[in-house]
Image 1: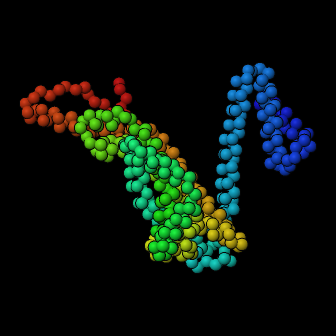
Image 2 (image 1 turned 45 degrees about the horizontal axis):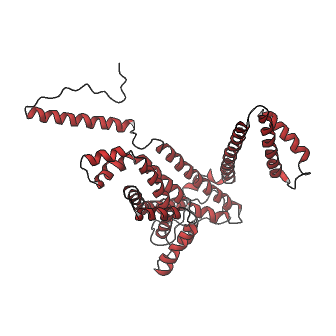
Image 3 (image 1 turned 180 degrees about the horizontal axis):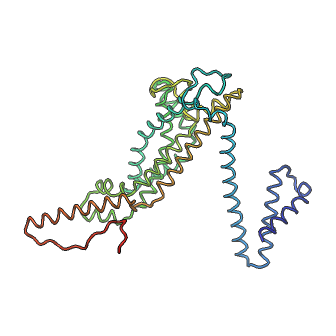
Length: 375
């Protein structure tokens, strides 16, 4: 049925396109053909199915088409970027040299993006040092407290999620550079990037902490543990994998920021390991500056830099997906073995105390390794 509808839509579009519609070009042909296909498919389904089934089948086609369109768009961006930067990214010097001794007309065998890679790592490290404690503390506050203060903070965090990155860069540029008088540097860029990372990590960590089973908190409170000890020893370890995912997502957001770095870090073609003094570049800023050049070699380096950044971000999202695949509270095999060993050691100490006190030792069933298959 779907094949017949597609063939009918193709024939109808070939006959009517350009005559009954004002659209033209390949894009217009695809749009008109898809609309005709939906109508034809709905008519064919309605011959044998009722109204809810028709709506369900048409919506399934639309959602599948949307997912396919998103996949094609992502694949096209990846292929286009890699193709435009293929001549530069295959050179070994691209990852081992900077641009301090390379001119606009020099071949691709000279120069690289080492200074941008190192600058990105330094900026992200400083941003993580600033962001991780603040974001985790804020997420714990939102989950462990109730009242107007928590509601206000949650509203502010939600609003910051939609904050344009250019505003964060302008804020740091106006306060840190213009008012306080500091120069453009990697530190200023790190502060601006941390502003963009903060709401991402807070919201992700907030969702993860909500998934921690409430009976764990209740059991800890029943044993007389204060709230801070429950959070430190029960809640945070239980949500460790989800919190790691939240941090990785924040890094993926921060590592691709261009506008804050453009306003606060300056630009340089040389290596700078001091984040406090002198300009420092990142991968997005380097790609932005290189692709603006009219020289083909510099443009190729710019697309190769964008390809490196894109691959790095995709790897971060993949790692976040793998790390965050386990629900909060579920232990890995290694953690299960460690918990079993700790429990066995605790039982041994309890039995030793009973024997020393002359008390009978309780007989317990034989414990089995978590990975051992019962016979």
